Length: 484
Ligand SMILES: [Cu+2]
Image 1 (tube, rainbow, N blue to C red):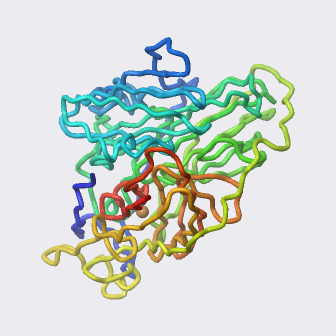
Image 2 (spheres, rainbow, N blue to C red; image 1 turned 180 degrees about the horizontal axis):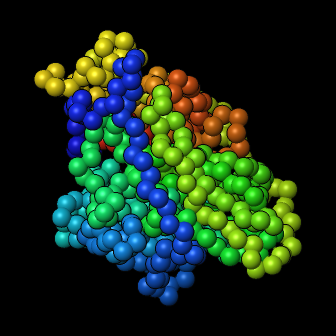
C-alpha cells in the first residue's frame, strides 16, 4: 500500500542553523486571515436509496478547482468536487454503501478512519485503479464522528484535498437532542500567497522531518476566521476533525464555555469542561460551545512537536458574536454513556517509535555528531522512521487474537511527538474511560494502551497501525497486526 517507502534525502539548502546545530527551518508563517461571516457546512451526501437502514451514496475522487484562498482557485483533488468531501451521515446500525469512482490520474483507496469495518472494506485491501470503481459496504457499529481519506500515496492525496467527515448519529443522544450539530474539519495547506496554488516547490528538510505544515489554516476547506452571530447561552455541538497531514491543533476557547462530550468514538462517560483541547492528526472531538456575553473565540495556538520546530503562530478559527440576544442554557446530564472496561489483558508488548539516520538511532546523537547542518550534500543522509527498530515493510508483524485484550506500551524514543492510529479496532489509554483509535505519543514518553481486538465477522487478517503524521507513515512508521 505504501509503495513510496522513500528514505528521505536531507539537504542543507533550506536550513536555518542555530548555534548548537539543532534547529530545523522555521515552520511556514501563516498568511493573514480574513474574517468571513458564517461557517458553511460541507455538503451532505445524498442518500440514493429508500431502503430502510441503508445510506447509499456516490463518491468520486477527481481533480477539481477549489479556493483555499478566496478569489484564487487552486487545482486540487477532491471528493465530488468539494473540499472537504461530502459529509456521510447515517444512524448507528445503518448500512453504509459507497459507490466509489476513481477519476484521479493515479491509484487511490478509501480508508474509513475509526470505523470498525470488515478488513476487506478498510481501504488497505481494495485499491482502485484510475478509471475504476469499487463499492464499499459495511454496517456502522459505533456512534460518533469519523472521517474518510485515501490510504495510497497518502501524504500527497490527503494534502491535495481528499478527505471528508462521517457522522454516525445516536438513536437517542444523551445530549441536547434538539441541537443540530455542525462539522468543523480542520486542515492546513501550503499555498503561494499571490496565486493560491499549492506550493510544491517548498519541500524542504523540515517537511521531511516534521511532516508538511501549511501557511493557511482551513475550517471546512476555507481560510477564514469564521464569525457567527449567536445567542449568548445557546450551545452549539461541534464535531471537530483534524484532517491535516501533520499539524497539531492546540485549541483554546476564550470568552465562553467549551464542554467536551465526545472523542474518537462518540460520547464520553461524562461531560468535561475544558478551556484547551489538543487534537492530533486523525483525532476527533465533539464539543458543546456556548457563547458568553462577549465575543467567544476558538483559536489555535502554536504547538511545539519538537525542539522549537513546532507549528508557527496562532490564529482565530471561529468567533461567536452574541448579537442575537440571550437564551437559557439547557442543563446537561451528569453522565452520558457507560464505559465497559476492557477485560483482562492476555499479554503485554512494547511498541517503540523512533527515527534513524544512516544507522544513528536518535536525533540527539545525530546532532552531537555535527548536527543536521552536516547532513545532505554528497553524503545523502537517509532519514527513516521506525517501529520496533525497522521501517515498513520490515517492521516485525504483531500477532493478535480476535476477542482478546492486549496491553501495548507505546514508547516514543524519538525527539518528536507521533500520533498513533490503529485501524479496525479500538483502544483505551490505560486508566481512562474512553475508546479511541488515535492518540498522541509525546516525545520521550510511554503511553499504555488497552487494545481490544473485538470478536466480529470479517475482521481476521492483517491490519495496519501507523503514525498519522502522513509523511512519517510514508517514511516507514507503519506496522501490521495479524489478527487471527
Ligand atoms: Cu510521526
